[in-house]
Amino acid sequence: MKNTNKALAALLAGTMVLGLAACGGSSTTATTKAAAAATTKAAAAATTAAGATTKAAAAATTKAAAAATTKAASSGKKVELTFWHSMSETNGKALEALVDDFNKSQSDITVKAEYQGNYDDTKTKLGAAMQSGSLPDICQMYDIGTKFMVDTKKIVPVEDMFATTKYDKHTVMDVITSYYTVNGKQQSMPFNVSTPMLYYNKDAFKKAGLDPEKAPETFADVKADSIKVAESGACKYGYSQAIYGWFFEQEIATLGKLYGDNDNGRSAAVTKVMWDSDGSAKKIMDNWMDLLNNGKAYNYGQKTADTQTAFFAGQCGMMLESTAVLKKAIDNSKFEVGTGNFPKIEKTADGGVIIGGASLWLMDTGNKDKEAAAWKFLEFVTTPKEQAKWSMATGYFAINEKAYDEADMKEYIKKYPGFLTAINQLKATPVNKNTAGVLSGVATESRQTFQDYMEKVINGELKVDDAITKCAADVNSAISKYNASTK
Image 1 (tube, one colour):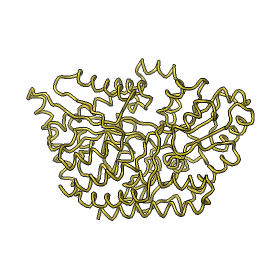
Image 2 (cartoon, helix red, strand yellow):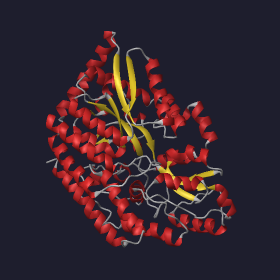
Image 3 (cartoon, helix red, strand yellow):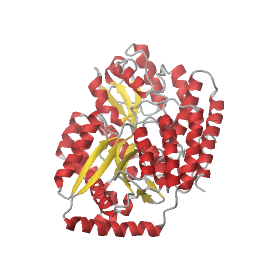
Image 4 (tube, one colour):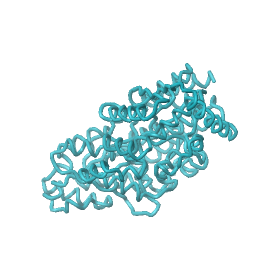
């Protein structure tokens, strides 16, 4: 295990420069080819060193956890847990409030929340902790870190704990848990969950002669409305979307297509991307360029914060962003903010959005008492009351549908009706391999690779077809190197 931990530390140091926030509303960072190569090389060393988890081990974990739960309850000794997270400012305060609720709800367990920096910082520190053997009991990790977390073999799948407390796995909506289900088992507990949606300036729509209560449903509608908004003078530009790999993945899913082969890596490891051969990347990039060249749209670059600022200031009439940005948009805009479903290039029955955000992982510390106690905390955070509080304080989804029946939550939705768009969009999303999202060990690197090539297309440095070919080759190369490490 020492060799595994050293390799993981190297891997995490490399991925720090490749990091992207997965929940939307965060800035992307530049990536060098050297850093990408170092990350891939380290990933190979890390995952080669990691061992395989057997069914017998999983069964033993469940049995031991049940015994530990009984033991902890009867010993009278308080269990102290360490919880590493990446929530800051408003979200950080909301998380601390949730932890306080849990600590006050019982007298057997104390959870101590410790902020580790952004997701990439947490990943780096987790690597160091694996090397030193001083793991936290609970760790928050962003969605695209899912395969990495499973491959470390240093986690306890939450589904192994369900039987210990008779937890109903359908407490959390299936469309959400499907993302974190690997090898037929739920690996972690969804926590801060978001999806992308369309934001629009209702005042600008009125000035342009558009119905302010009708959001465009397709990208053809977006283009038509964008032209009217810009030509009316209501906004300088009609539409904008950041150059963000998350949006690319979403548009593939809304087309009812897979990002990668082998059912998006759900039936077997991804070996190559599908979007270069199935035509989805071509449709997406051509549509993007048509919006920029003919649809009065504007490109503000890779930093999602720059597009947000332009929208809040009334410079552009519409934008794509995370549902988690809704409260921020309302608070920072001097106009009435409208919301609509993520637009589709084509309407398909199998298409829908993919969740983003992060989940909570039980770390394999070897201390069964602590693992059982940590599971109780994860179970607590899914309760309707706590989910309603968390959602209202942060703007993230309440992952338990019963949270929307809470009186306070009902009042919140009356005050912010735009939030219903996010809820209804998620409920309408089909649960399938397309909307589960791609399970890849190089997801972070792949997003940045797409962003860099898309930027070259927008800047006129590459034609769409050439960019797709080069981008697919680079991503496939990274996938191959990662997969070689698992043999």
